[in-house]
Length: 132
Length: 213
Image 1 (tube, rainbow over the protein chains, first blue to last red):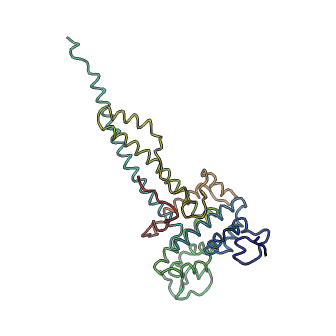
Image 2 (image 1 turned 60 degrees about the horizontal axis):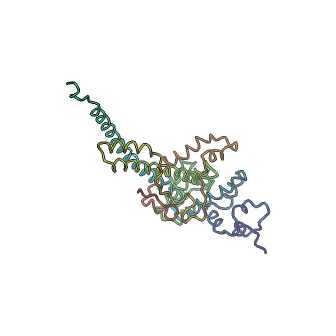
Image 3 (image 1 turned 180 degrees about the horizontal axis):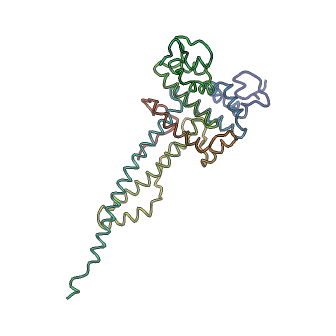
């Protein structure tokens, strides 16, 4: 038998029809890709998700499903939600740091304006000697 | 959290079967939250969830179920990107913040380097506002979602949010912009229930956390 079956049909040990829903997104040279999504979602659920989408965005959907399945295989407890949690923490840390620095800038900027105003006043006091 | 002997859990109600005392779903799918199991079943399937839970220790299963429920919810709201859409948006937000942080640090260092009092500070103020937009280098999370040990290099976040919104324009009746906002806000709201002792463990090899410089 020639290896014209996609990775999904190879994994499922079936004939790969010309209109196979999986074959554009699960090529035979990447067996892990389908193995992961099959493990997490199941073939029929993947097929249903893809079939409900317009053809031009099925590739994106297959990619994101693989990404989530990969995350879940690496972290069976949290999956990609672990990454979301981490990102939220990093965003919070960055916002806190930014707020502190902006506050410090505001203080220094206010001081600078005060200094500038004082300097301006000093420079424009009339010379007492000119009155004599 | 287990259902009483008189009330089947949400899973067994959905599957129309007797809820056994040792039901693996019962502790995590109470009967008053039918949508939770319905979503998980639709995306992952009952047998896949059973297999996943059976591979975990009992104390790990609640977090696993809650994260699966979250992922299922996101996938149903956004069938194309699911949680990955949320990750992309958060990464974008983080990049923006890191850029703002770089600019702010640069501005601050000008004040500090040139002194706090006298003409030096006035010059610093002028210089800081003049160079406000300058980018002094950003430590990004390794190139986006598809980086590190990920088997593909694919930036899921479209070049602009309109593309994400456009994915909803297939006549499914969703208000795309509010759905996008819901994705982000719901991710913030629901995450409080996840107690993750080691956040970095989940992301090792997938994303490089940004360290404050």
